[in-house]
Amino acid sequence: MAAKKMRCGVAAVEALRASGVTKVFGLMGSSTLEMYDALYDVKKEIEYIGVRHENCGMHMADAYGRVTQTPGVFICGQAGPGAANMVLGLAQAKFAYSPVVAITGLASTEHLGRDAFQEIDQNTLFLPVTKRVMTVPRPERIPEFILEAFRIANSGRRGPVVVNIARDLFNHSIDADIPQRVNLDIKPPAADPETLVEMRRLILAAKKPVIHAGAGIKWSRASGKLAALAEKLQIPVTSSAGHADILPMDFQLHAAGVGPRGNPVASDLMRETDLIIALGTRLGFNTTFYKYTDVSPTAKIIQVDIDAMALGRYFPTALAVTADVGSVIDGLAAVMQPIAADVAPWRARNEAYFKARAALWAEREASGARTGTPMHPDVIYAEVRKAAPRNSIFTLDAGTTGFQATDQLPCYEAPALLTPLDCGMVGFSYSAAIGAKVAAPHRAAISLMGDGGFGMTMGEMTTAVASNIPAIGIVMDNGTWGSEIAYQRDFYQERYIGAHVHSPRFDEVMKLTGGNGYHPTAPGETADALRDALKAGKPAIIHVKVDPEATISFRKDALQKRA
Image 1 (tube, one colour):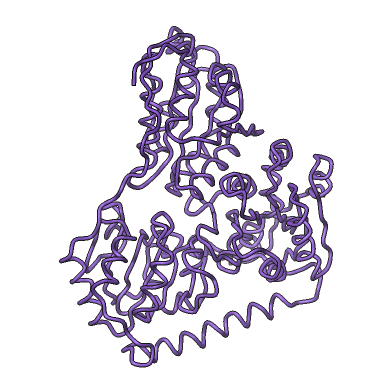
Image 2 (cartoon, one colour; image 1 turned 45 degrees about the vertical axis):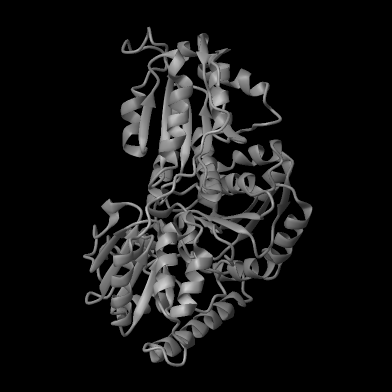
């Protein structure tokens, strides 16, 4: 392709187009106005979604990347303070290994190092919270750096990449040779035959094997393969924290989450097993606390991950495999003979598991059928299970709401659950739902979060309305910072300070903004409100009061009771 003369802003946008970008989130400012001007000419090809805060925009790009498996893009219009507002969102994306490309301005090159207006050392600022920080040195290299950012963000273990561009570099015309389309589908390594044979040997030697799977299953789009393997071998599957959507909720061999953010049935499987087949998971903090509390200390571990650094990092392995988890499942299925349920060596364990799983769900349904007010959170989750479409995407916050909901939601088609994961961020959920809806407009995007977290991000209601993004937010209002008031109750003798929150009626605020608002006050009304919101197809907030006494202490490992 012959080089063409173009303005640098146009070259930057052409690099986005070559990377397959069709949606861009951003908050405009003078540092990147040349890019904005170039976006004006491609409005039919690249949709721009303007947000109200850079951090929220990063969450939207993060969710978009998780759902589409291509980098979500955020254009930060302002150097310095605008760029600094991205830090928490970048950290969140790094913890989740989400592919994100953030393009932001810098102070002019002639002012760098002079403590100029809006000058911050953005390279140092972003280093700890990104996969890579790139600062463009010359105008003609702008498209090259943007194309490289996409390759880095989407290769290997994915992550966020920031491209810093000094504002004066945009004021040039360059001869640019930009390809029509670049290939971002970078194939990871597959497992070798000898490794698969050893995996088979370890499985056949086990008496109570468990498959424990994580985000790698979703990144590999391997949920169907995993379900087929579990059925072929009659081995139950547990999931790592925040990834209860790796298999459909109604798949009988899916026990769901292990550890403090999981459920006792799945945790018991991991405590009693003699072989953990860890597929696409680091066995990280929120699942294990890096302890053997919910992991059998005598179990052998087969660990498969795309990142060699993750293997054996927290728990010693009998076999460590650096490979794409989908290809490993394919290979393992090919070398294993089917095991019938009635003759499986672990049949008795499975029968006990099926009974425990049925009892757990019966207990949840009973809890969800309570009739008192203010409503228990389990009532809300039960009503969501009744009303949400099967292909819904759910987003959660950290804190007590996310803790209680983590494997109670009707997740059927991965990716269907987006959470803050190990970043533990409050204020993620609603913005993430907007990003998920942009990524998958044919699927319902439903956010569940507390009143405290929603208050941090309520400005994005205007983003949803202005860009006609019909994400639905369910605000579970208990008038508190839920996790913290639970700690003060359980560990600090009810010495409450700073833990109560006063919020407006967010449903009324959404109505003022131009969307739909609902205020359920009795059991059954949340399901009705959700059905109506889905039918209306407009941005909506369902503001429901929940019982403040239903909060749960999560970090029991980190606090000591006051005498």
